[in-house]
Length: 235
Image (cartoon, rainbow, N blue to C red; front, top):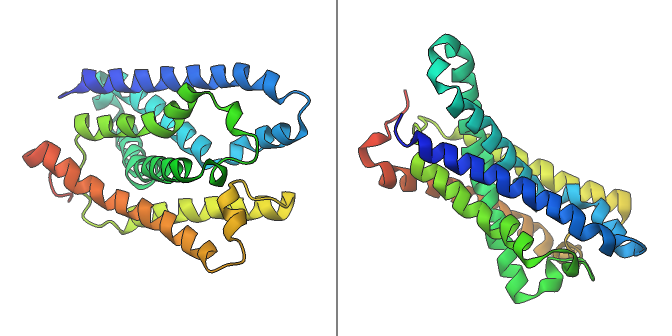
């Protein structure tokens, strides 16, 4: 299959880098958190950070895709399973992973460069090593672009299902943010605390959703340009 080796390399590299980074972060963060209540609170909230969600999604997608590529030769014997798994891959990447990677990169670096205190809770930026920072907030984009470059996808006849998945995913995450505020009395990201109670609070949510939808839309002309006649209208 065309570019199969490129995809296997990309998935394997993504899995290796993300797992190695997670292990390193565990080793790097643990001694810095010990005995510091503020940093401990931040560390306990890590599973609720959108960056971690995106990282785990990319790790999951890469693992599932790698399994699919390695078992491609036996696809004829597992036709139904292959069809459903490929459908899952298409929805996960197009609706959730690709938009999420761009949201993380654009929002994080915009706020990071403008005012780091808007994106990192107080005294927590020291917990993140610069290399880990770039793996989680920068490298995720090239990894996703690699997928667009080397895996042809069918242009959907209707984008409704994909957009619904996107909106549901981001609505669920916004719900987690609000639940965390109700449960813990704090916002995971300081920018939400700054704008809470003002007109900018809902506008911030709309802006993030707008970035996600824009990223979703852009991927299709990009894929069409890369593959030109190789991408066909879905039936």
